[in-house]
Image 1 (cartoon, rainbow, N blue to C red):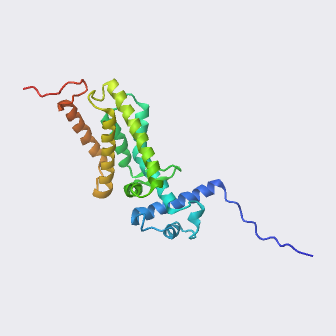
Image 2 (image 1 turned 90 degrees about the vertical axis):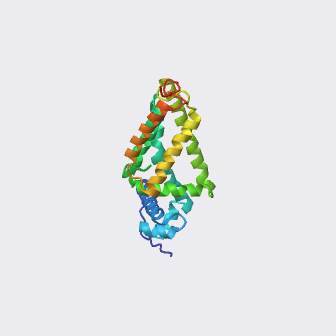
Image 3 (image 1 turned 30 degrees about the vertical axis):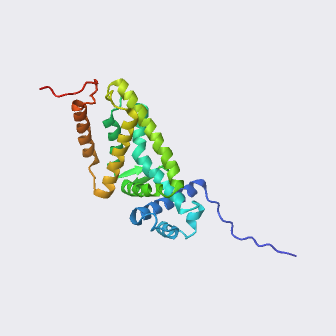
Length: 233
């Protein structure tokens, strides 16, 4: 007669616990990437940082590149989501308004990630800067980044068109090109914060608003009323 001996029944992991463990691995990877860079960090490094077994990260991610993509998505959402929200909800946003919305996020110490957890902004921004180099070599990172970039551009472009109708954007401005300018300024602010210590992004935004107002008043391309803005003798 065969006797079957039952072993201990392993408890099934709940979806909530699985998501929490996944978030812990992402947070550990983000710390490693921020500190050491993408390519100097291995999956065992991430596991050690998270305090889990070497194989545990592979239960949640197929590869390190998949973790990079998740973190890059969070990083760029930090920068561009406030701009997208403002662009979608107002018909009279100016260029300065769109920039101020994103600069406010860059000036924060922490931000809420897609899972609803607080994340240090510096870690995300350091990962965002590194992600740009990944766009040149990794199609898995480049494809969604390009799609997201184009989506934000469209949103800003439409907001600028509505701003022109409302009189808050000069009529001589070409919205498509101006949207690129807005994106370029945001990228520049991000890089300056990470690489060159631009911590007062709120003050930077104030100066930028004053500069834009001065350009509108004096530029030959025209201010809000479409005039040349020439200084009277």
